[in-house]
Length: 433
Image 1 (cartoon, rainbow, N blue to C red):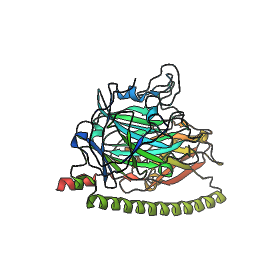
Image 2: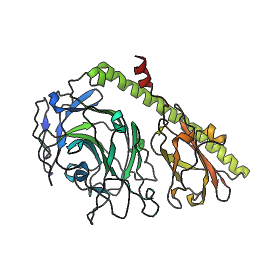
Image 3: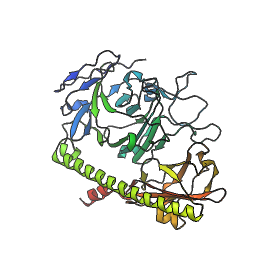
Image 4: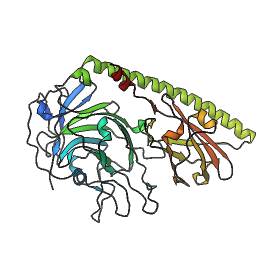
């Protein structure tokens, strides 16, 4: 079923370039600073540029629109359907809007309210055998009032009720900060749909792609995403307009037109530029911290080599922390423990593991795994730790994982991490005002 066309029109200074040849081709928006009638209702802002957004409208639920297909033998609250045939592990309902190596986002106004829809890649698309790594952190009060009614992909093992070993995507979606880490194979999609956004909302989205994503290195898919676009539908589904966005810059999605106060929302005023400069300074500081961490890790590697020569039997472990560590949440943080020539992850004594800041772990503290782990052997060992038990505080930038194998070999390793502050500094400033 095709959604009825959106009949709302508006007048802007856009230059439209019609893409030729493909059915449902996207039309590029030439000017991202165009102003629209407030009736448009929504806008997206990045780097001080504001663009009005018109949702796609339809009479189906967003779950039916997205049409995620997961084989029925798998469980999980993912909004998926299975009519008995594939293709599976992707979105069939919006294939006309998908693009290879591209994240496509848009708003959908359906019978249960307005939803944010995100889809990465193209089902059966020509993007080779490699997959992609993407991380999004979203912040906004509206996140605590709705839910991700579609999770592409999330599915559980019917025998254990836990996330299936083959499902590497991570969904930390509680409270007002949501972090999602996606990784997917070529010819499939990832993404999701959040509902409802409500009449008044503002979302800040911090996207991280490719090397900056949590699920990126030689242990995962290593294809590349090259484009991020937000779609608008002033002329209906058949002629969407695409706003091209930067992959590595924050964006703000909000209810309200571009005619609202730019100073408040970073829509092109000096404050927005200052905010971007501050973000760049923060990124420079983070890069310096990462360089310092690399030097520290090199020093620790030398120490590990010395220990091996002394016969202590300690093995340095390589692990990956999925996404940010949010100290304001008592949810779970996911850690991937990788094997190497000296370690078969199937030999790890999971109960001995501790995860947290180095000083805390060295003193015998830190979080213990919430379960026995998934995977292992020739695959990464997937572990989950309760954030509230780790001992992390705002400003911490290093995590340590330590434990033993079943034969008593000592395991230890550190990684650079990003820990969200334990207090909302912006919120405290607002209260003082």
